[in-house]
Amino acid sequence: QSALTQPASVSGSPGQSITISCTGTSSDVGGYNYVSWYQQHPGKAPKLMIYDVSNRPSGVSNRFSGSKSGNTASLTISGLQAEDEADYYCSSYTSSSPLVFGGGTKLTVL
Amino acid sequence: QVQLVESGGGLVEPGGSLRLSCAASGFTFSHYYMSWIRQAPGKGLEWVSYIINSGGTTYYADSVKGRFTISRDNAKNSLYLQMNSLRAEDTAVYFCARLRGLLAAPYYFDYWGQGTQITVSS
Image (cartoon, rainbow over all chains, first blue to last red; front, side, top):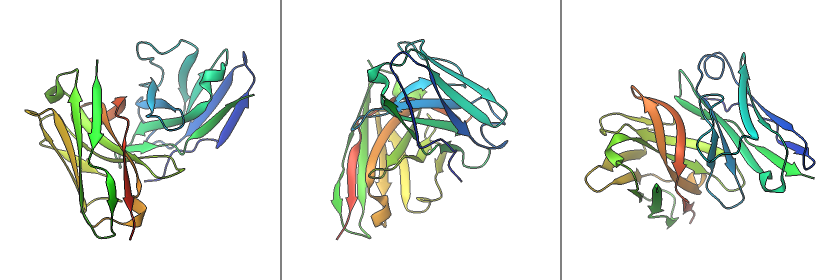
C-alpha cells in the first residue's frame, strides 16, 4: 500500500496561516471520511489533531482545522505559533490496507 | 487519564525474536481496538498491526505479515506484539496506540504511548 502524498516541508511566519495537503486516491482519502492528522514534536509521541476529516479532539486549539476535496485532504493552521513547529502526518482508512499514513510534513515557523 | 506504556524493546540480532508489551490504564481497555505503529530512524510513521477489542480479529501490514503476531489480555489491560524473524529494516521506535474504529474498520489513533526502541543488528 503506497503512502499518502504530503509535501516534505512547509513554512510560515508567526501569525500567518499555512495549509498541508494530503493526496491519496478514491480507495482511501477520496472514498471515505476517515482522514486524521497527527502532530509530532522531535522525540515525542504523535498527537491526534484532527479526526474524521474535520473534527477536533477536546483540548486541540481551534487554530487547527481540516477539510477534504476529492482525493486531497488538508490541514490548515491559522495564527501560526512557534510551538506549532513539528512534523505532521495524515492518515486514512483504505479499502485495501486498511490503514495508511502520509510521508509526513515538516512545518517550520520562521 | 489515558496512559499507554510500552516495554520490551532492545537490541536483537537479525533473525531473532522480541516481545513488546503495552500496559494500558485510565480507560476500559476491553472496549477499544488497539494498534502498533512504528517509526524508523528519521522516517515517517508506519502502521504495523491492530486488534479489535475482543481480540478475535487482527490485521497486519504486508511488511510484517507472517512474522509478527499481535495479541491482547483484557484481564491484564495489556497489548502485545510478538516479533519473530527480525530484520534490520524492523529497526524503529514502536508505538502502542488506542485505535478508534467500528465493525473492525480502523479510523484513527486517539492516544499514543511514548514508544520503545527496537534495534536489529549484529
